Amino acid sequence: MVLLTVLLQTAGTLLQVSADGLGSLGAAIGIGLAAIGAGYGIGKIGASAMEGISRQPESTSDIRMNMIIAAALIEGVALFAVVVCGFIL
Image 1: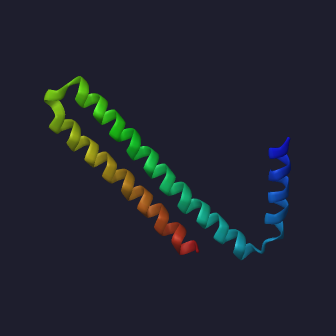
Image 2: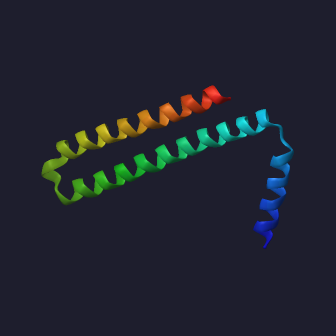
Image 3: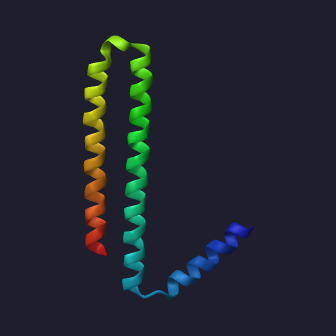
């Protein structure tokens, strides 16, 4: 119930904000979500790679190479999202 009240108050406040302020707020939230999503994705990749290496130590180099490629792709998408949201600001 308290959460609903806070959300309604926030929605009321956001409706009073001009269109320019609302766009900046959306861009800032987008940058934050991109950073959080990239951190979560790379964390999952690292955890899975460590688990795979512990199960099959002989394939360490292959797992490491695939992990680095996947992390680079995630970083690229996150950087693109941050740049696009930065242009909105």
